[in-house]
Image (tube, rainbow, N blue to C red):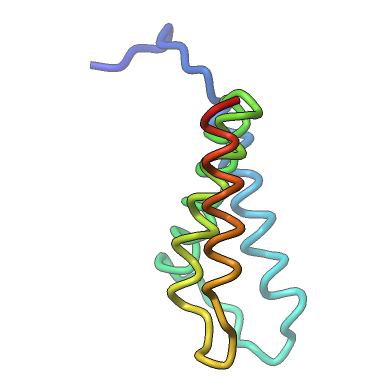
Length: 101
């Protein structure tokens, strides 16, 4: 059971505030959208902020490896007009050199 003395390496209040800021910024840039709370939308922003907070605690070389892996995974969603082969080879070579270092 969690108590008041439980510590965490993450500032959860700051994470929730950042998620709210991102959520509000989404609506500020789109005045034509009806402003109503959506749990699904907020959970997307909350997950994104948690992901950023976790990446901040990781060392820079490992963080870059994670970012490269995400870029490689995202290539599957590029439109067919893009030739992703050279992009994939460049990213895989960069990942291999990052793993060696």
